[in-house]
Image (tube, rainbow, N blue to C red; front, side, top):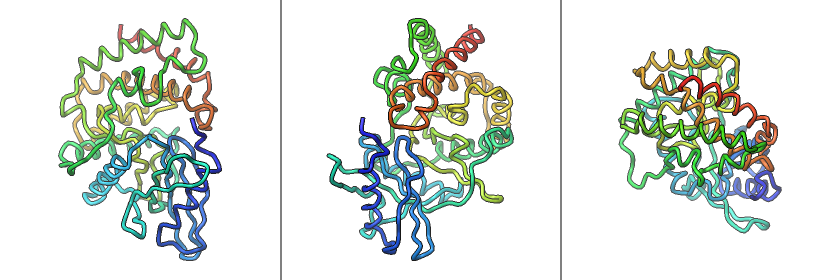
Length: 328
């Protein structure tokens, strides 16, 4: 896989800002590499900042990115959440394509308004109460929103999360995967699939979700809370947004208190059934198994995946044993 932190991607970002109505002084600074590469754009000539997202090749189509922006527009217009709007290029496009020497294919790029603020403290249980309320507002909107024509986003079901052709690759190819780990996690996959088949995909349980609502994707600025990074939005189980809230920290000793706070926040806005609450741990296991695959397929170029390494699979096995014992 092409290294997303490569110098060529930096040149894509530098070329992209020339398509917008920015001053000649504008410069880009890489700030994050994950599925996509994100840059801060400093336009000193006009005293403005922006966030530029260079999309990974073939992760989302231009049509899917446009659909993401359409939902963001609707959420902003309805006052459901505060989030960054996309900035149009000089030709009116909000999804632009850029080609540079050194890359065989062009890249899709989106420029967003810059939002000030810092991510809440993930150790602060109160942050999860706030996040639960935000999830509930998003879900209420998704259930009632009439999607525009040609709206296309991924469907995040079990096959996409943990199937052999899943979006992060095979979990079986995760780091530190031996015979015992394969046997245990195969049992876990079977249990997840069985329980979610029973839980079902009715309209009250499955629909348009943010699908990456980690604490890191909230920005707090005074009394304002912004929601960012809708790049993974798509149709999935609504309750999976709880699992994304604790993705990569599923082993945290305060997880029960975090879940309790999230549920409390959610119920302050919308109803949440006992059946929904009962499957929250199942969605945590679904997410964790997905990230075992993600670490395995991303560790050579994504810093966060490299840092997690094989220890993430070891922790997964400990969590799987506890979960399977609780539902047996």
